[in-house]
Image (cartoon, rainbow, N blue to C red; front, side, top):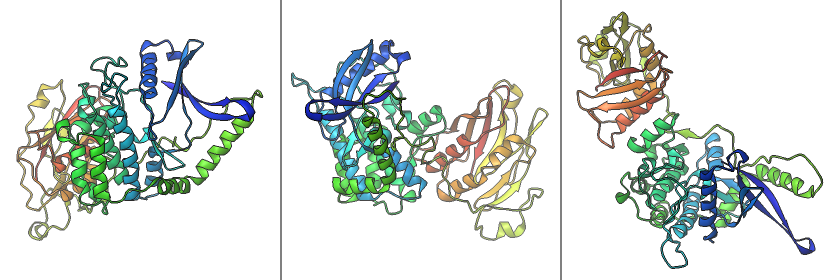
Length: 496
């Protein structure tokens, strides 16, 4: 919605100071909603003066375009830090995480507690606490910025029930358009903490819909699996901070930060944080400062605009998500047979899943098959426009005697083949989560005409914290299925 400019304030005796000017993009400048958002951001931020909040100095208008003047910062965002460390296969030090969280929580708590001139609580909620909106300066100071979608008492910057912010960092009550309070920022900060701890996106998925479902329904992952040195005491801290019911969360970000420090130990101070930022981003910061100096030293001489290559604006590649990052499975494939498992495979202990192919059903003229991938069986492919499909019956099949037997659809079935390509991930679900689902559990996958999964649901619904169902849902939702003229529906029997 906006664009940023580097500005220089000049004064007597060669005095100068750099600032940032933010204004609405020209083609949106006359839009009342965007104007209201910028005005609200300026009014809210202008009331705040805290070391851990990016300062706003002025709101004005030029040529019928609103702009705000903010402090200029040099450093990197937490998002850039996560991107770099993930790409290099490194983990952020626990003390560093504790130190950043301590500063961010101080800034947010200050905003939450801010009162107007009459002494009444302004009830400010940032509503967009993300790694991109936490800036780390070269001096080791964490700054929360971008209050563009913040909400305060009596604010009119958004319509009632409207959803503003980034889905992957929204609390459930915020994502559904319900009334929010400071506990929505608690939830968002807990997401950032989880991502800093594991180098993985917690709820981000390939589409907004899947991200929405992840926030609303996704059981929390095993954080310690992706960060073995994470203290055990951090797990209940993250669980409480990420509780879907606001009443079960920490009441304030300060309470959350205190619990994090108790679990992780001594937080790093500003000097230590500064050393990490300046060391890891030495070349990027030096190049950035050189570009800024070049622009500033041009003075008033006419020249073409120069776009700065900011180290806090990495490329589109992102750090890993819990959805797409899997370790190699130990699944072994046997030769294609008539579906009967070899006697030694049934009588001997099963060290790893065994793959089998076995057709079991038909819909119309198209062959539809069963696929047991780790634990998944495709019973039928159903189209909303086909009554025959809904009435299709599955042929009887022998119950596998091994711990995890795998029977897959024939290679000629495109839906079975699409799922078969993910057998390693599904096998990983089977071997990683030692739990059972009800015998009659089915996974229902709705597929759009473009082959993308629209939804993955279970009947009967699994328990809220079912890691097994969550793992299966993530794998099935990420598959690209065959395209068709209408929406399709897969019914998958899930058994172990």
